[in-house]
Length: 362
Image (spheres, rainbow, N blue to C red):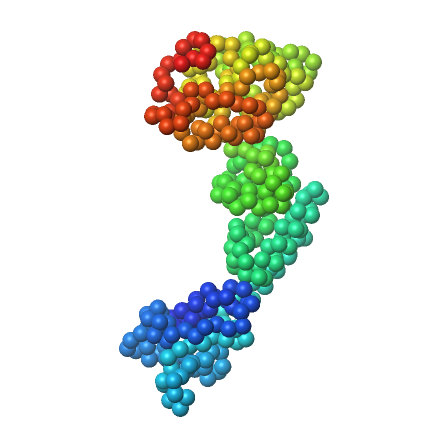
């Protein structure tokens, strides 16, 4: 195919950016100054200009654009170029390109076709509502983010992947799920941002992350130290007898018939280094290491006895206080900050030094 000439490439770019090109709603496109177009196209002088002007006259002759002249009788005397929305199809056919209207229709058809995908019954209405909104946005030239504005393989990949994710069952590591769903162990991680936005929209915010689907970067577990007992299969397991820290899986937290602690306080600790220093003290405080809490940590916090005091020991920076607020909001527990002061320098909790044996340790 013959490459598009510079002057027509520039005209096509300008038309696509106009209201008519973006939405198909405008009935006029303002005239474009010939000198501006030629300069932007890199053909304002010499042979390049001569070729460009000849191409423009030929396009006018076949009726795909208009050249605005100061004197109608002087054929070479034109100063403006006008593209006509009603001639959009003919103009882009002359360029051997799809018109913006055709591209919007093709994109809308891509969303409409995806409505036939197999989606679990509980999410079927949300999926169709989501696709209908994007189909209408495509036709109107509105944003379809995170999809591309041009129908293509990237959109097709997302539209094929989301129904499979909504049907995912059980817990698996992210790379394993990626191999099964995408044919590559790293592809799902690359697509996580747009995929999570789409899934959140489809489910009305009930599912917001791959973790919520059971597709996790690491096994879902909570890192704990201190007095904690679980009743499993009718028998009590006393984890407080362990000297070191231990990990408790989400599955075991959820299947426990009861969870008890003799501790008066629960302390979440942002940094694992500080957590292990505190664990060495065997203070009787129930310690849980967490930054922004995962599902296992949240499940444990929600099952702990209500009379417990809840404290969070984090860095005294903005992220540390965001973690504190996130713990409060998602766990429903009234976490109080421990040794956290805004503006403290250095902000890292390790800067407080070695902890002492008695509460509050520093």
